[in-house]
Length: 86
Image 1 (spheres, rainbow, N blue to C red):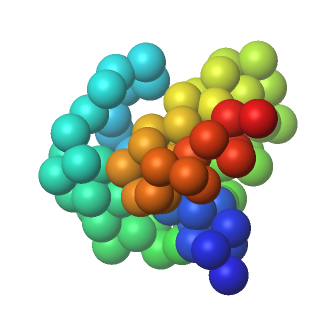
Image 2 (tube, helix red, strand yellow):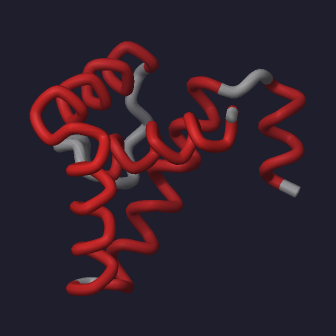
């Protein structure tokens, strides 16, 4: 269940308007995810993710690594972060 929530948050952050490569605050991450889910829905965020991989796979992979890293940093406890990094 935790990995599904992580994936949903990462997809929402991926489809948000936050620029890749930034280190947003937890509040900015919460707000960006909430906006993305509110405007697109969870399925819409996943559809944006899939479309980006189809159209621009090299950019999508970089953005998804960033989104997943931010989500793990903000929402996962420290021991879980170390396990994801391994």
